[in-house]
Length: 101
Image (cartoon, rainbow, N blue to C red; front, side, top):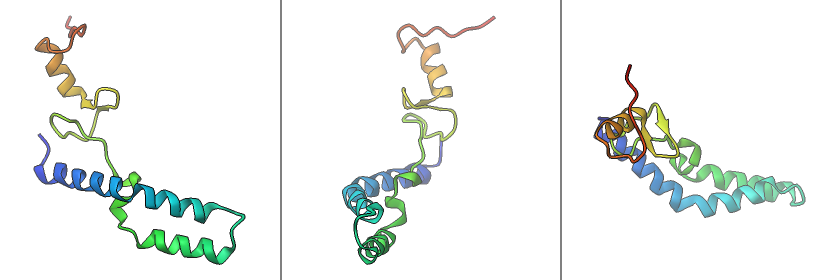
């Protein structure tokens, strides 16, 4: 099990990303538009820099929904390999059979 603080920090980041997503997208669009004057693009970049760092989607880290483990994460299932194996061994995932030889 991951530290509770790390899990909560990730939730807090996710909330910030959701809150500022539209604003960041609009500012990025202005900043990357070559047809706009240089001053306007520069102002958009300054406003983008004033936003909280944790509101950027690149600061998010994938974590297992069950354990909070940050490594060996399956995106499709949103759980880690260890949680997947435990659920498979308990027969809670239909069609999944744990291999042993």
